[in-house]
Length: 66
Image (cartoon, rainbow, N blue to C red; front, top):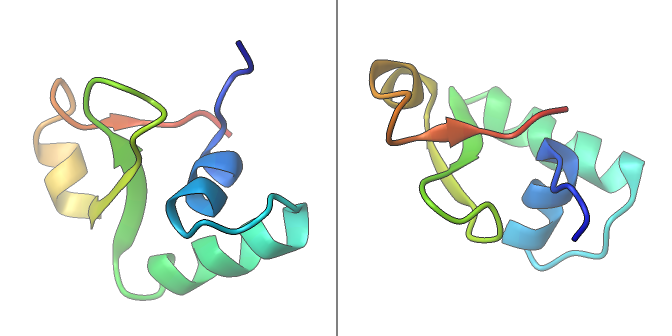
């Protein structure tokens, strides 16, 4: 199984084909409003949460590696 990176996860979440440029644009868009992509139990099931919420509960909300 491939490792799901933060860039791949954001493209999967938005149902967009993966490319570095597309991932960068999507990530920049959510970062501007204080959000980030993460997952709970299954890395193939991405969610977007407020960065503070992710940091507040790191055992429940897990970050993807770059």
